[in-house]
Length: 362
Image (cartoon, rainbow, N blue to C red; front, side, top):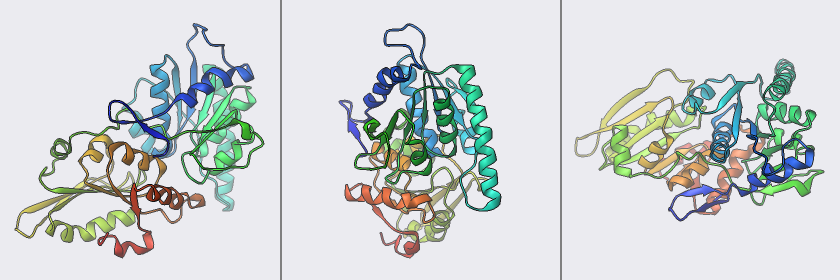
C-alpha cells in the first residue's frame, strides 16, 4: 500500500532508493554537493513542519539519511504540535521558520505574504549558515519558502507529495525542483516531467506492530476487551471526539473500550467509564496527544480517523483496519481522494462526515 513493501522481517518499510538517487545523482546536476566518495559529511535541510502529516515523513527521511552518515536539520513551524513531536528526536538540529497557510481573505493573504517573505529570508540565512547539499520539502507552507530559497542558492531541491491530490506547495515548486516525488498513479503538470519519481510514504522507524494484548495493558485497558481508537490527526477532530463521547455508552454495553485522541487544542486529558451488559465497567480515555503512536495503533482493534496520507500509511504499517472520515474542508478535497484509493485496495472503509449517524452501524 502506498508503495510500502514488506521486508524479510515481516514489517512494512518505505523504499528509500528513489531518495538515494537524488542524493547521489541529482545533487551533482546543480553542482551543490560533492561527488560520491567525498569524505565530507553530507547535509540535508528538510522542511517538514506545520502538521504531523508533514513532520512525521520528514523525521522518517532524516532517520534514514542519518543512518547513512548524513547530518540533517529540520525546518519546523512555531506550532505546538511541532514542539511536542520533535522532543523525541533530539539527535537532529531544528530551526523554526515563520509561515501561515494560503487564503484569499485580504487580512489572511497579507499575513501569508508577509510570512512567506520572512520565511524565505530565514531559509536563505539557514542555507548560508549550514551549507546543505540538498533541500527537501514535504508540502505545506514551509516547503515553498525553503525550496525557493534552495533554488535561489543554486542547490538541488526536491519535494515529496503524500496526497492523491497534489497541494499548492507541490504545484508551485514543481516548476523548478530537481525531483518531484509523487504517489503512484498521481499526475501533475510540470515543465520538468522527466524529474518526477513515484515513491511511497516514509514512515518513522518507531512505527511497528507490537503485541496487541501487551499494548492494551500498557495503555491501561483490559486486554480481553476490544479497543476502538478514535483520532483526528495532530490537529484533532471535534466531530469525531463528540461522536466518541456521544456513543461511548452504547459501545460500552458491547464491551468496547475507547481511546480517543482529541488534539492539542483541547484542554487536559480525561477518563470516563460505563457498564457493559454484564455490569462490568468499560473504560474510555480522551487524551490530547500520543507520544507513542506505535503502541496506540498496535493496541487498537479498529481505528476511526481522519484520512491524512501519513495516518493511512501508519495504519498500513501496523496492520490495523480503519473507518476513515474525510475532513470535508481539506484543501483540494485531498482527504476524500486519499481514503477512496485506500478503500479500493481493501485497507479500510470510508464514511463521510455528513453521514456520521451511520458510523456506529459501520
